[in-house]
Length: 441
Image 1 (cartoon, rainbow, N blue to C red):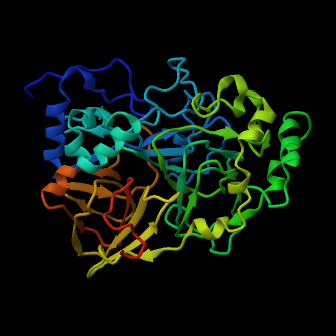
Image 2 (image 1 turned 60 degrees about the vertical axis):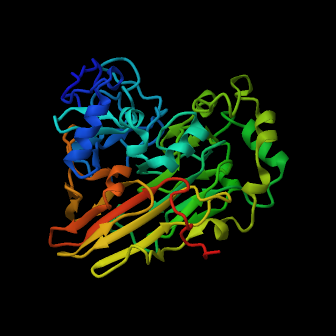
Image 3 (image 1 turned 90 degrees about the horizontal axis):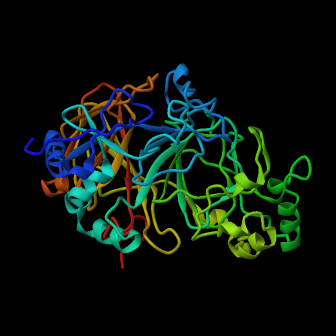
């Protein structure tokens, strides 16, 4: 390379053997060129794992049994896979090797041709239009003040439902699929608490919050309808709505941020202190001097959104055919589509390519992808679905199709195996000139 690279002293907690390139020293441009040329504009991303101190892993992230509980996480297990995120996440976990939060916890990193890794954000900063395209770059700069990938792609997988919580600003969408949940019957009992029953009054909700830590359980989920989640369909969860996501492995997209308020003081994983309930609230969403001020919290609470009788009807996304991507030997379905809170905020597409089949994939926008089964090729990147993955090893399952790849005419996706090759694509805000699932004007 024309510009020498410098290496950071810190390591990603999962990959202590991989050198992390300092992207701030001017070498990112040439590294990006090398990465784009290696796989026809497709970037290989690393699996980034995280754990929540208030959750227990469901062990469906396909790690080997010993990898779920790293000896440096103080007993916290890995229950999240962050596939594409360009901002720090907030878990509260301390790496006992450093006595600090894990370095760049959850942040996306790209494997370079040299075997070193560099943050996706550093490559975006080097040439945002080559990575994200003009439209996504303009959108990100208008919303975040800088060029950054505007959505997060992750999976969470817990033995028990996640504590009931809400996000003041962060909307989410869910893809709960049979690939991530093998053996789960369509007639299951995995439910998600959503909002509040219409009969719950403001005073009842306030009494529930004020009872935090005063008794056996504050009882928030007693006030909530519980919805059976349908496998292989999508669902939208608007910001401001209470929810306790089901104990199924869930592929999730949300706007690029990480914030939440926990609304219950006892779960199957243990007790939650009042201070911990507000730990991940951002100052701009909920001021710190109002933490544990339950009257203020109830005043900020959106009762109309939480008690909407048509909430499930409005936010369910039954799978539909994606005709524009289907073809001979290629099945294409939209899992999440339409508008979220009145705008085209994200979408999820799933392709299934039969053995021996291939397709030229050229969407209107760059996209993150991961595999749900089989093996094949995306551009020049050889992709394979794995079981029993060992923490610290690198597996080619997650990738990013850049604007540079689309400018070259798209990427060829080919099934080179003997089983269906299944890929899921996550698209950002405004990715499509025609919103999927909505009739053309």
